[in-house]
Length: 126
Image 1 (cartoon, rainbow, N blue to C red):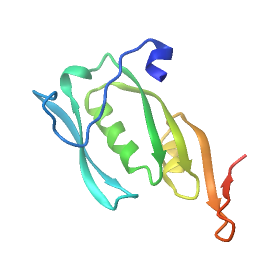
Image 2 (image 1 turned 45 degrees about the horizontal axis):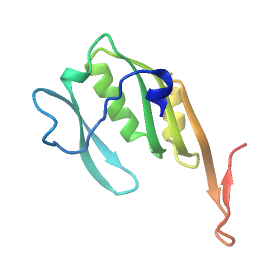
Image 3 (image 1 turned 45 degrees about the vertical axis):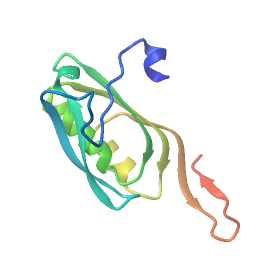
Image 4 (image 1 turned 180 degrees about the horizontal axis):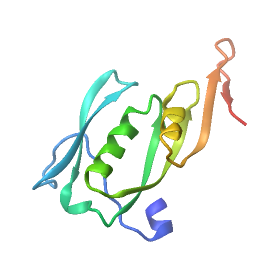
């Protein structure tokens, strides 16, 4: 939806090599806080170069490792990170602060600061 709104192309970072990815790749190893494993994130070099300004869109932000991997790929392509959009940021984990401290513009639709363990109610940041 963001790409449609801005009328710009979409480039996917994939966690595994697939048949529609060929040629040279940018790669970064990222650790998943949620799944407790490491993955290689892959972007084809034919889709990313020094002329690109990239808006990173991701679903969740916890410790920031996935974003740091994507930023690394963009930097390796000599492209520019224009900004970062996150659906749900886990405000009780350090990722958002780490990325902001690196100087990147990061916006989240919702920041979850915690959960009441008795009621199960999610506590959102104002």
